[in-house]
Amino acid sequence: MRLRLSVFLTFAAAAGLAQQKPCPIDVFLDVSQYEGAGAEYPKPRLEAACEGDELVVRSNGIPHYEFIQVTPNPLLEQDYEFRVPLNPKKADKPTPIPLLGSEGFSVGGLAIFGPNEGPVPQEAEFGDPVMHSIMDACMGHTALEYHYHALVQRCLSDVKDGERSPVLGFAYDGFAIRGPWGCLDAECADVVKFKSSWEKVGNPDTDSWDAFDYVAKEGPEYLDQCNGHTDESGDYHYHATETWPYIIGCYAGEPLGMRNRGRPRRQVSENRSGRRPRRGPGGGRPGPEQVSQAAAALGMDAGKVAEALRVEPGSIKPVNPAAAARTLGVAETALREALGGGGNRPPRANQNPAGEPECFFRCGQSDEDAVGCTLTPEHKVVCHRPCDDNKCG
Ligand SMILES: [Zn+2]
Ligand SMILES: [Zn+2]
Image (cartoon, rainbow, N blue to C red):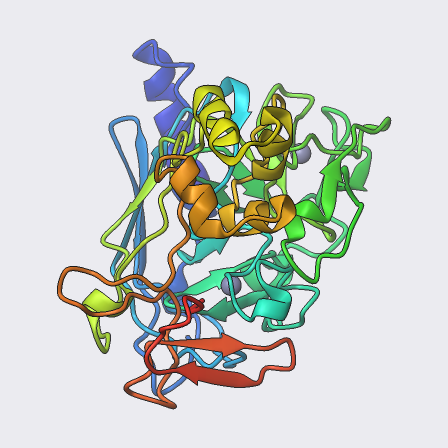
């Protein structure tokens, strides 16, 4: 691989493309070398390539290590195609990651999610899934798809803890996500464990974004609000951290990347659970005018509404209309109505034109007719059939 890389670099230099990053396919795992999720599952599949100015990763979403089920949802084979910019650039200002859904992918070809869970169960809605101990030993679990809420280096690399961490994944803005250890100088004489600069200011039992604030800190081991930094060589990347937000806190670049075809190959009913959260720049984020209108309609102070929605100037937290409505003491439907139907609507029970309720999580194989389920922090599963209480999670 080293040989191929140097050949590419020579070619790139000769062609005057020195700025173009070499295709980073060597950071991806050869998943065919591993046992896979278990005898009852398909073997993991992963292909990485560069096409034009994009890194393209195709995978079947099956872990290369044994799958231990910790949620009621079965492990389903996917047909992923992730595409991210090969040469990411830092944007003028960061972009919030989505409240729900993927923000990137691992070097094993699996989806990476943010530091909060979905809207159920009610007593733990949007809480910290790591704190709630609903993750496996590699900090992944299944919903509609297997995904990570934190990264464990030894699950994705042979590099020892304490040595300079390899790349463990990529965010949708194209920037690499490395493990927690990194260099402080060009020679890498000093390897440190990078730290999140987010401070706990509330209870991450529910809505973990309201429980943490970014507070800039002195010291080269502290990361920026997106959980990244620019190293000595001028390279910007994220580091997975031991504490919240665990992977990334926001996109430092433009989240131009995407995931295509991210649907399970076998699924009970597409139209019940196929709905995807919105993602990407804006992502339904209400603008100042929309907030002013909503505040006027609700007879409230615009600043208060903006703060509750987490869209005040400088905020890079994802919008959560359910939590905002609770903060403001109004019904979520009233807030959504006041916003004119905007506000990064989370996937939850809605009637589609066919009259079928839509849900995000499945209730696994425990109840074929279930349209959703509640997973308590104690792993107790409560199936909804039908999801008429608007809490399908
Ligand atoms: Zn999850
Ligand atoms: Zn670094």
